[in-house]
Length: 361
Image 1: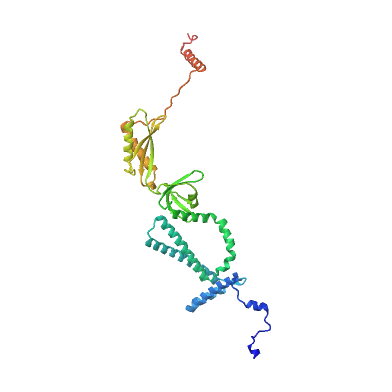
Image 2: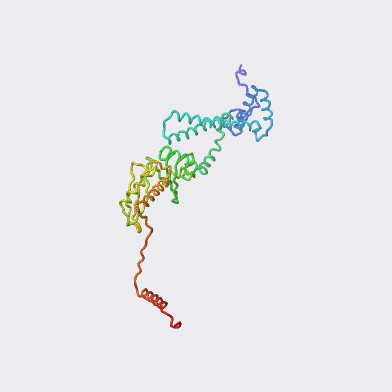
């Protein structure tokens, strides 16, 4: 009876064998590779049960391959990985389009919040698609923890600017200080200014289109650091200044009336606020005025409005006889002894030339 109650233990069993029989929970890269192979085999078996012809083709593709360590790489496995990657890309794009459509339909947000929501939805859809692809391939993510430290260092040093621009773009969209459609002027550290309309706020940069149809990609981080002049932040009404100079001899009151008429006759100049004319100062050659007029569509440009006002004013000045003066300078020569001697010498020489020659007589 004692022998029957005692557990049966083989005398040849060693402690190392007993220890190896205990399951461990720490995954290894080899185990991850075997799980991926098992996932490919399970997919192959499932397809073979439905179609013998396709199953035979898959078996032939699986027979072609090579072994690396304890992992076997076959044509079928590589083809399966490519198919899963393609399926993940297609699923992510279609899912992003569907999510954007539903987001626009069920929300009533501003342009900036709408764009921010679409960006976040896109990131979520892509993350879900990638996780589904990893699950289909049977890859154990815990086996990748060995490379997380190196990957974190790579992001910290190599992709620092990229992540900085990403965070800056999200802040700009949440802050609503810059949104698609705004007209801005950005100055860089060298003092160069870029004027244009925002077409798109991307993950890395903001697309700004100028009046000459040149598109500038300005990094989001620069819009956070440098000074930005937003012409349509709170209102799109912008004032334009047109400097004009007239002669000192003309009728200043008549010239001012003609300037107001020239500004009012421009197509894009607003009636409210009305155009005004300011006397800016007395210049060296002219009386300087400034025409103040307002527009509500700065994205269409400001130089063309200034040009139209000046053209209208030109023809009105021509009809009314208002003179636009040229630069004039008065030269004053101070008298001194050397200067008077020079004048006397020149006068003496002119007189000598005017006297008849005695030799000729």
